[in-house]
Image (cartoon, rainbow, N blue to C red; front, side):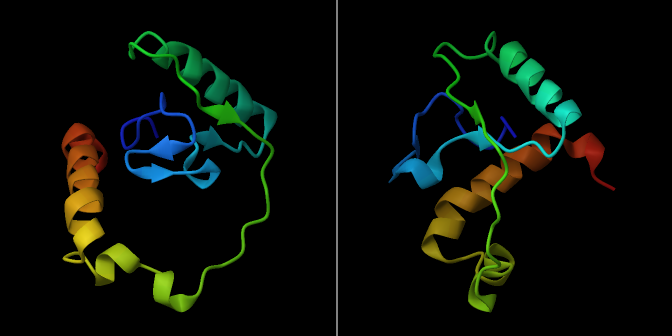
Length: 101
C-alpha cells in the first residue's frame, strides 16, 4: 500500500488533486484496523513528513462501467498509463519480486 503512493500528501497524489485521491484505509474488521494502525505508526519513521493516511469506515463502491475494467491491461500505452501507472507497477514488482510466482 505505501509502496505505490505518497502517504504524506493530503487529498492528492502528484498532480491529481481532490478528496478522491486521499490516502485512506477502509478495514473490514477490528484485526485489519489494528494492523493498519500499526503499519501507519511504523511507517511514520520512514518518511520525513507526517503520514496523512486516514482509517475510515468502509463504504459501498459501485461497480464501474465496463470501459473502466482492466483499463491498464487494455491501454498500457495510453499517456497516463505509460507515464504514471506503468512505472508504479514496475516499482512494486521490483520491490516485491519475491511475492510473485
